[in-house]
Image (cartoon, rainbow, N blue to C red; front, side, top):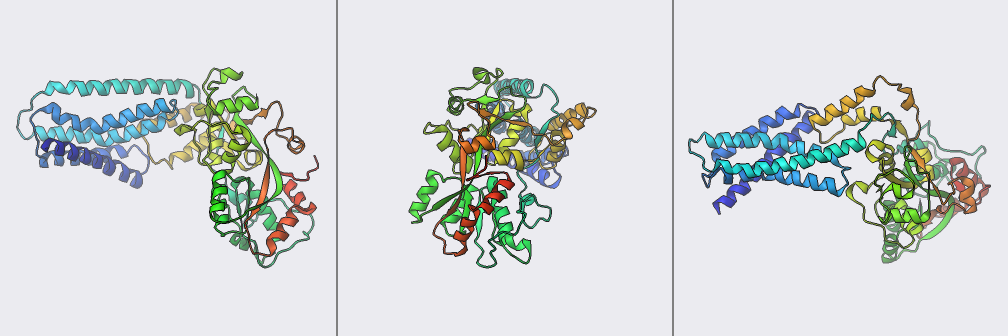
Length: 500
């Protein structure tokens, strides 16, 4: 029992050394190499004191040594398994995680051994530390091979292209912003609401349309007052708020089965009025030679029947199909309109994107995701996503890293310097780094959306759930009127009675 207690207390002390040595340094000093001496000092102090206070249950050095490396062995094994599981796409995070533990664990182990040896008692079976050391060497070799594979695939050349700056900045479409990008009518709208303002919420991809509607119709003393009635909680949260009666109307796609079940459980009957159309699109990085996919191919990619671009006319490289969370508008559309009853393969960790901006970024940064494919809505992808030079983005990103390693920072600076002298204008232009695919030979143009030849045209709905606000129906009637539809088309969507 004393040996078990020794193991547990040692692992706990080592973990504390990692947390106290790395996390405060991250928060106080920031992601810089100065974290290393901070962690070295902390780990050494905790390791030395723990050995002094511990009751060593045995004089066998090997038995004392195994618990000291148990934590690092576990982290290293998890990192290697994670690399295999995610097809090596998450190597950098695993490297950072492993480096962080090393910063805290190595000084702890050295100080612990030195403190134990200073007691003057001879240690037996020192030679039996060879097996754990050999195991660590083998695991490090495997990790090094994974690193080499990762670098060969994704870091062959310095990337001078574009990436997504951040998730979408909705302030650009805010009525409170004097320089907003909202569409407007040339004449005063026939509907003006100056009391009992309906509260509106909805999907990120459709915020420009309903923000423009409220900005045009709501008559307030100050445009900032409109924000009291305007929200963008994203599709899942918007449906939750509508069902709970917290908003009068939301602007979104059809609900998921889970959202319909939640409405039935709450005794709420939702009403759907089509107000506009958009295209559900698939995109790849510009370097991917594939420009068109059939519906069957898309389904086979997301059921993992097709796993290599070489199978469908592309390069011989695996396919990394991104997915969104269940309940999001894009994931619901993917399941209902694209998969059509076929079971989508569960996403690997690196195939999951919580935000639509993150999905576009993953595809845009082709040095990490040359093999990736993503999906979203045409207006969001073409108009709302802002692309920025990759190098400028990486410089800013360094300041926001939560975990880091000295080697990673050197790698970033090294790659920046290698392209610093190139023609920066080549990537300073705000050019998209992604390519929207046609489906079955049909591009997602306004004309093809309206005439139904593009297979994944979707309707955007104004959704209500028994609101008592008398102006809600008037607002919806105005949106589907010629005036409202003109505003829809000026925004960049296709009207339900479009002209194409």
